[in-house]
Image 1 (spheres, rainbow, N blue to C red):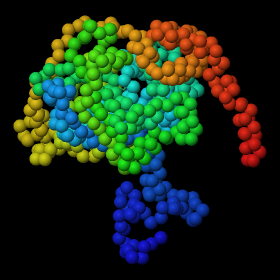
Image 2: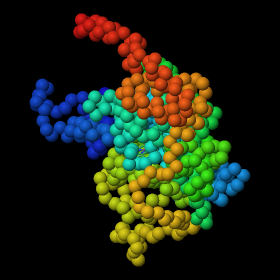
Image 3: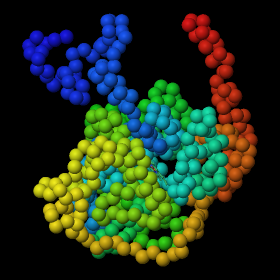
Image 4: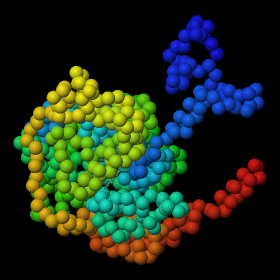
Length: 525
Ligand code: HEM
């Protein structure tokens, strides 16, 4: 169709082109010898279109494949309790009250693939990229404050046990609890996960936590241990029972993505307060757990939540793939004034994220606009697939891509404070931490639940354990009883009275119904 006001020789900005910039005059028919074919190989326009299509997917994230994201702003409070925050950290984004930093957040589920239902029982990811004046800071957290394991060597096994069976491609509670029953440190996490806290109602009404322990460093190079937590503001916290989740899933498996997108479109912007817990940087032998153990909560009575700023999400992405799919977060992405602790999981994670992103997105993933810092970038790195620009500084001698140089290349930045230089003395070993206390906090968490949350937890575990072998059931019940005698007893009793975990066998689904329906369809076909 032509617009007769326009000169057909001068394409306007809406004109379809190839990526080579050639205007496309026929997007309906490939070139063929006669209208019935055969087709010819020089169909460049078709080949460009179809070969790009063939490559439309990058590998999905090995975990946290399903996600939703949004842009927003972090506003600092400038204080920690009654004290200036500078006493604890020199990170610039926290210093002045009212200072704003742009952010991008990606929420996710963990175990299943890119289009899996968002109603599944699973931790939720809560990853935030702060585009600070000192470069990017990524806070890669989950909704729950603890984790399944405390040693990164176990992560691939854990994920294999939780993901679908390699033969049947179906997630199997028998495999899930086989691993968990032999990893007693997971007892606390599964107590949260099988309670209603394991299915947040949506992404807006859930908490976030960095889970692992970091450090804050001040101007003098002194450090404290720190844990980060996101607390929802006026939107509150809401979780689902299994029945609620089933009802939603029967109508939509995208409810959380849709909820976030629509809330932001309607101007109903979700907000979270960023709180920290801090502790002096030592082993804390007075505690019955190790502060670097990510299966533990730091009791808030002893280590209060101190607000340091708030975040508002107020802008949807303009394209899902460009932003939400290609965004890349990592625990190694810190700014001056923030540091790593010796938390082993944190150190294992820090290697894993950028490694997978070089594979998933490509060697130059940091040049993509969603990942690039919104500040000065000048490196001597170049080459690799999809390099799209040179990180050259204005006035830099283009012949000098090395440092040091006297010929006008890049130079090091001046120090902004004393380095934090912890001293470490120990034998190089393979050994678990000493204060494991695998069950104490699991029991505290169980007792802190409201009655309906406990009932839901017991019912969900009974259902899951009913799909496990007797020895896995016995090991699990023993762990739960060690956490809390009542907890173990109630699950054991529930299991004795349980007919079967499979809805078809427990009478919730009539197996005949499926047969009749397919016969009916068969006759119609
Ligand atoms: C994503 C590794 C533990 C939160 C990922 C990805 C990997 C990974 C490879 C995919 C990243 C990508 O493709 O961009 C690990 C390892 C862990 C670990 C090796 C333990 C040793 C944790 C823990 C948390 C967590 C404890 C919570 C605090 C996340 C989140 C994402 C993610 C939120 C998704 C980020 C996004 O939205 O792009 N993890 N992870 N992970 N992980 Fe972990």
